[in-house]
Structure formats: C-alpha cells, structure tokens
Image (tube, rainbow, N blue to C red; front, side, top):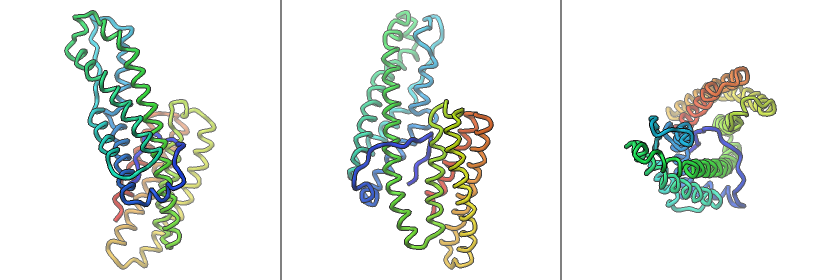
Length: 294
C-alpha cells in the first residue's frame, strides 16, 4: 500500500535488510497497517487538527467568563489503530521504535486531554475561575508538541521503509519488462517527493524549495508523457480484461499526477496553503487509484 500524504519528510533510520523486510508478507502487512494509522492521524479530527484547535483556544489569556471550547478529536481511535499495527507480527526495526515513541506520546496527550475536554465541555472552568485550565495549559501544549514531533519522526521512518520496498519493486518491474508498472511506481515516488517538499508554512515562500520542486515537476512531466505512450502501446497488445483494466487505471493515475503538477505550478504563483492542499489531494487520489490496481 502506498501512503497518503499530509506533507512527508525524508527520514533517517532503516537497517541493512530493509529491502528484505519490505518483501516479507508479515512486514508488508505491518507496513500497510502503519500507513493506515498515520493517514488516520492526518484526518480532519486527527492529531494536528486537534492540537491546532486547542492552541487556538489560547487558554492562558482567557477569562472564566468567556466561552472556551476545545476538542478531543478522534485521537483515541487513531491511537488504537497504531497500537493494533504495533502488535502485528514482523520486525521493522527503527519504524517499530518510532511507532512506540508515537504511541507513548499519544497516550500522554489522551491522559490529559480527555479530562480537560470534560472540564471545558461541562464549563467546570467557570466554577474554579479557570484555575485548573491555566495550571495545565502549558503542559497540554508541550504534550501536543511532543506528539507532533513523534508523528513527524514516525512519518520519516515510514517513508524510508516504504521507499525501500518501492525501490525493490522497481527493480523487479524493470527486470520483467513491465514498462507501464515501472513508470507508475516511479511516478508515484517522484510525486511523493514533490508534495513532501511542503512540510512547513515557510516552505511556501522558499526559493530553494521551489527550485527542487521545478526539477521534480519537470522530471515527472517527462515521465508521464512517456507513460501515456507506453500505455497506448500496451493496450494494442492487451488480451485479458484485467490487463485492459490495469492499463486504464494506470492512465487515470497519470492524469491525476498531471493535475498535481498543474496545482504545484499554481502553488508556485500563489504561495497559498489552500492550493497546496489541492495538490496533496490530487496526490492522495492518485494513491487511491494506484492501490486499487488489479
């Protein structure tokens, strides 16, 4: 399974047998479960969104006479997914270690956030003059920040492990002569690298980031042009319906990544977070199509 993206990084980690690990059925299933758990944390009510909502409440400067609202999001369900992934058989070395650190950080967030949510939801802060809320505010923010850092580190290890598996698969596809499959896999790698450039708000105005982005976009655009020719050629030789279906989906993936390139160029002009989200959404839709390839 390829992973959806909310801005991915390049991690350190891995070991001398990451390619072998990626090809093991047990570790492949565990890697897929880790990817699903990470993607869940990125959802609308995930960790970053819940932390943002809490910080925007600005508890330290508020009065108990004001209406203060926070969210507990869906972090508990997402932490459960991560814990279930950790319990699966198979060893992924640094990725397992990063998952353990993230799990611990999420449990600390939940241990404080759940009672605080009840405190604000029932407006108990008006009864104690917001004393408890202010006393716990700095620690709650620190625990959110620690969990966000652990999430970034987990994503870096996840990308590294996924890339090892993708590189091994690329080599197999190239050796087998499956040009369309090879191009699809390579295009998804380059697309992941492109969306991964925009990890922080300041990246949207960094000329060095856009210099890398221009090179990736140009390379991906050339690859997609080659892919369309490869798909057209393969369709003339396809005999089985499943092969025709695979080629059609490969074409849709290429089209979606072409849209993503256009959105990248829009981001370069607008420096807009909304345009960046549209670019990432196109990447995520391409991931969904590629994951459903017959």
